[in-house]
Image 1 (cartoon, rainbow, N blue to C red):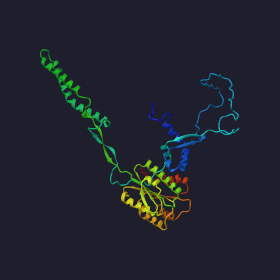
Image 2: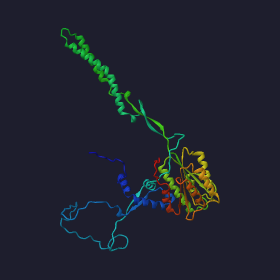
Image 3: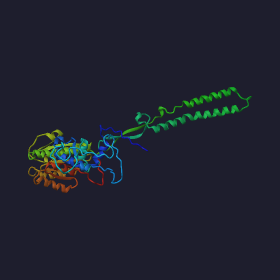
Image 4: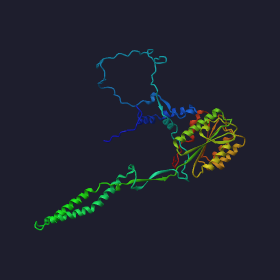
Length: 432
């Protein structure tokens, strides 16, 4: 019989294994609660955990019960008042109106309280980003193989005890003992044979000095055999590790947000919440993904994370300025042969006169041939404008790598986000 002992450290009165089983069993209810929580949260508290309630009727467990008929005896421990066959009085306070609960009394109905528990931050984010991935992530040529991992490179005579190869060390020790003791054993065997021959001689012919010499030689050889050490520092072998350069899937995500005057405060808040979801998703699941933040009105500029989410700068609308800056950054820092390039853009669709045509030309001719994926989100409750129409022509030309979605209200953010970055079923496995 085998016993498996789980020695993982858990918080007091909690079990990590049972908690994971519970989360998996009620995944449907938890996902619905997480989706509702994402839609109602503000941009400042997207990372905290969440309190989830599950109706009591949905957490019933299967139990074994006695069937009807037959006789059975029940022993209730701690019972000092009643004996078998006694009748118990009905408890006081029944009949309605006598309880201490809140609300008005009723003479009908029954139910079970909801079961509430709290998701941790990691569990909450895990449910948010379950089943999401960066589309079309490919292995690129790496000019500078900066990333490496230790690999086995044979054995070494020097190393740390943690890397000692026990089997090879014992094999070397055994080979050394055989090599060192073999000539001693041969000499010992010869000395024993000579002693036996001398002892078989007639007592008159025996030479006492020769006998004494042979016995001393045998004793000396036996001491030499015992002196051969079982293992020596010369025998020790260590696993030798060397750093092998590894190609990695380097990727960069460009976050482009319209902050022009046509974007109301509600539109900007929706855009920021969308980009914050994207930011948390990339930071959590993709360690090698860099983020580039671009804000634009009549002109575009690259900013840091703080300025991207909290700057109050505004102005007119020229979307092509952001695309030109995007193209310049790619040319200067992110060669397509070495990087997977992704772009996420949020705008209300409003643009200056014929600038939308220029945006289409930049995307079709300069950007899309080098990009892995382009996600455009238009935040507007009204009819689409010229920018959407021009982007539609880009999507017709690159249907697999250009995606467009509309967000009307805050409740659309999470469904749109999941639709844009849902896991693609393809013949080639995506490497993250």
